[in-house]
Length: 444
Image (cartoon, rainbow, N blue to C red; front, side, top):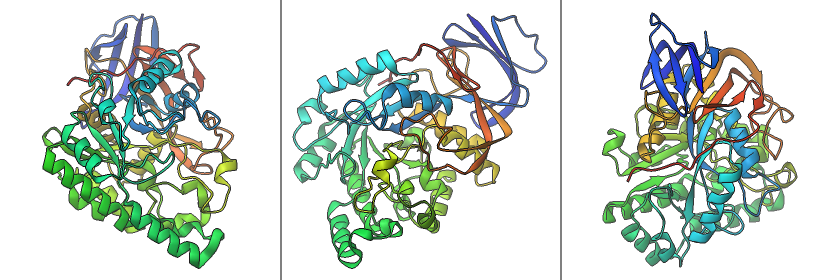
């Protein structure tokens, strides 16, 4: 089976150039310059005027399976990911049951093998008493260990100081942390609840999940990782102050890295009165000054990857008062076009979008032959049509929860094709009848 994508604008490794790509079996067989003679193929896609990029690798999603499948599941929301140009994901452990044992992890891999439309890996979750399980994780197919240093959906808080020290001291895998200081949040919650009661406005969420809470926890994680020479990756950085904890040196030289999520780059505290619970996340969307600092931090290489923290809840669950509305929202279908929209606005170049969403995750996790448009690499690719106006609505999304925080927003790009392991899995609104995904393999 050969697929030829011809006359595309290829965005890869900091450059945009015209070219064509021949896919053979699962792999990129050859990349052609504009003047090269093109071969025959079983399928030819004329990509004139479109961007061809590596498929997005999202290092933080919550697909809610098992146990919470009324919100999302691996099959449904991996299809939404593919519709957004995401070809690989790494999924979080706060399911029911929680993925805190090797057996629970094995069961997730089995579900994904049967049902996932995108390539996959899963984090093993830490608790206050499962260090033995963490040490059994296979470094070749497990992306990392997830540590909730602040509680969030699922209440997997690891708050025992000795346990934290032992995790950072003994676990050889990448340690991915959710960093918010629990006591600070509890103190803030009590103060605001006394002042406003159950009808507290959502605009105070970033004062409860405050910058201080984030910095206290992130700085502790960095302190532990520095002491024990751990491989630390701090998820969803949301404040400008936290950027002081990170280095702008090349990714390959870092043992401490940081992720920023699309919603922290797009929204700010001025949006709470309009969107309410739809933009309630943990950590919170914070001030415009924080948002602008995160954008600069991405350009200055203080922030290493862009992800989604895709975390669906139903609208019935979200449409509650502040204290009863869960945190999190669906993002994986629109993360790429949202980032390209910011590039269109001149916030950062489109080449940086590809670097932080495709190349950097592949480098950071040492993923085998993915994340680049290169000969000999797996053909995980996305085609995007620029200047194709695309208004998001709750009715148009592929999410099982059937809503989007971007509803009503018009983007100027649209994903037209997603190719995974050399096969067209998504084409102009239609999905392949069978997934062709694989477990991600990590070179350790």
